[in-house]
Image 1 (cartoon, one colour):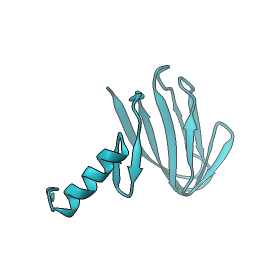
Image 2 (spheres, rainbow, N blue to C red; image 1 turned 30 degrees about the vertical axis):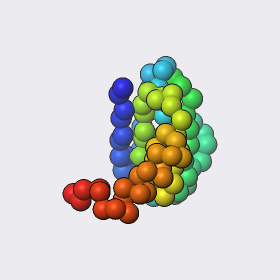
Image 3 (cartoon, rainbow, N blue to C red; image 1 turned 90 degrees about the vertical axis):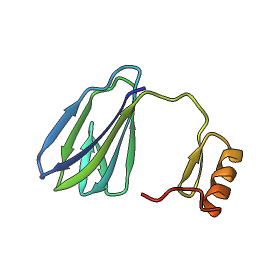
Length: 107
């Protein structure tokens, strides 16, 4: 499985054009500023999903920062609670129990 995460910091007027493989999902998260993604305006705190295989044309409307995520779908259920992301509610509960018992290593 391949995945890509890119952090693009742009000055007003900068442009980024990216292609995505036909079998990959993609999304864009704006963490500062304002951009347009294929003519749709995105502001700080917004996330956009990109259709599989669609080219992304991103234009910075002002000084901006965004994350671009591209990857193959995992085709598995996803359950989240707080910082935990697992495949089932039972796995979430186990992760919470493990955390509460101090079984997570610190880095």
